[in-house]
Length: 130
Picture 1 (tube, rainbow, N blue to C red):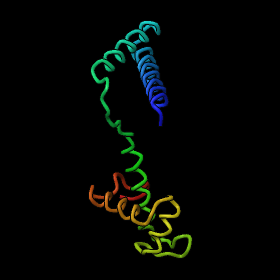
Picture 2 (cartoon, rainbow, N blue to C red; picture 1 turned 90 degrees about the horizontal axis):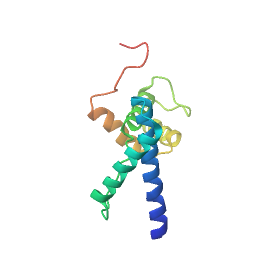
Picture 3 (cartoon, helix red, strand yellow; picture 1 turned 135 degrees about the vertical axis):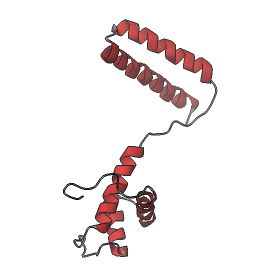
Picture 4 (spheres, rainbow, N blue to C red; picture 1 turned 180 degrees about the horizontal axis):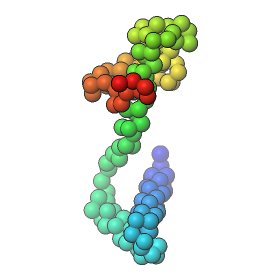
């Protein structure tokens, strides 16, 4: 990666930050777009002054999506009907099927099952169950 690519990528990030802020200000507060854009640009400029020349990681905020995927994996793992290749619930064959179906490794499937178990089970019961 060249420094010009990084600078361009970061500039797109800043432009997107301004655009998102403008949209939120216009929708939530009925602010005039020009005023909202000026306010967001001031925020971005201040952030650049505060955090300039620093490197940091911005997490992807995918926790909800991962939890939903883990729940689906748990449900499929314990489903009473045989899997597509005839696998039984809680079996290694079922784990292998889930790995293929979810484009994950067997180890990732076990980690997903462990995360569900660690948080005390599924977040909500499937429809029709109590």
